[in-house]
Length: 275
Image 1 (cartoon, rainbow, N blue to C red):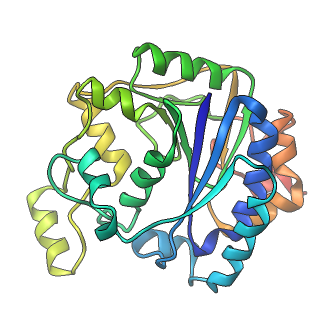
Image 2: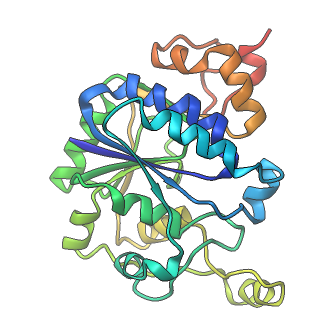
């Protein structure tokens, strides 16, 4: 069995209301828990610029309450302040305790969510991801449990392998620790950019996915994007997620019923769905 974990923030109500029912329908009894880790701290940096002003937290809390009763496997967890969960960064990073990257993307929230999974294989996905599953989940779990690959992603709709992406990752933290892959180094920007970030009051850390890619590039981890057996689709903005809801994207992705212009593009294309 597999633990499915995700992260949510104040701006994610429309996403959570769509993706949680979609995930339950898509994966069925192949997952034995679905955990939503909620971070009440307003977004910053690039994430804040992408999603706009932080909405009233009552909206997302209502959405979380509504989806939490859909299935007994769903568990909503409040992200604690990093100071109250000091053991979590220590399990992931040998030096440094990153909370967010230099552009504002979460790091602590991601690894905390992964650590909430109780199964030996954990699938962590952003709450803006839709899936068509036709065998990739079973194959990913097999490869992870065999130790053949450290980090696996489902097939991307564009068919490209690409670098490590934290949008969707399948991994086994237990196995990574047993085999000495964790804790990893908390990779930082180069010296000049670290100095600049210090001047403007921003942290020096690379994004979590960039840290993992560095580990892959330096031969300490392995990574694979699967081919065949389904695909994933990314819907980046709140506006696009509203459009996706209007177009019935969740059900159509699950049923592999895509407009021709959407195929070949990993990111949601509003012009392909709305005529």
